[in-house]
Image 1 (cartoon, helix red, strand yellow):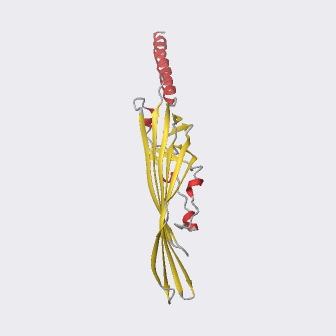
Image 2: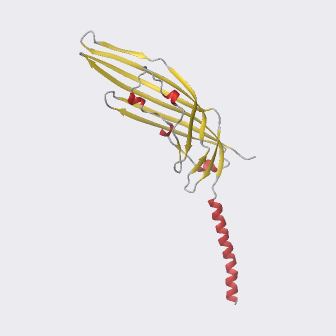
Length: 240
């Protein structure tokens, strides 16, 4: 009987210990949460060169084009975004669509023309500096997410059409060059969950920067260089 009594007495604290462990596990499984006001600023640059050659009746004409398109994006107001921790270590965002974005773009370039062959075809190169063109829009929006642990990535930009293509012949933008459509997902950024869920970190930011070169072959050879730079600023919302 004394042995049984000891077993019963030992069983009580063991059960209490198991319950405490279960309670601790349930507490650890509860996702951490935070809320922020978020703004975006970004610069997208597309620069290209190409060479077009036409031969007719003993005359070879060559056009060398250089063009640059630069778009800037700026949030007109901050949006509210909620973040929650996921079991796999990712950060899950809700409401992470930036809608109030202004877009402005500038187009610059030069065109150099030359001709070789029998007179009167033969002409020295002449370079035309194309007029600087500018456009703007207020209808740009984009979402962001964390596709894997430690990474933040944007979705496809929407509403950029009014400033993406200028439909001009100076600087010329051949079809293969026009088909290269620079976008924010080209650059990802580092995401530290400690910044997200540490209450003492009141304001923090993430940046992304990437460059990509595309070589075009064929009848109109050329090169396109894309560069994306962005900055996402998070300001923590605290309960009063």
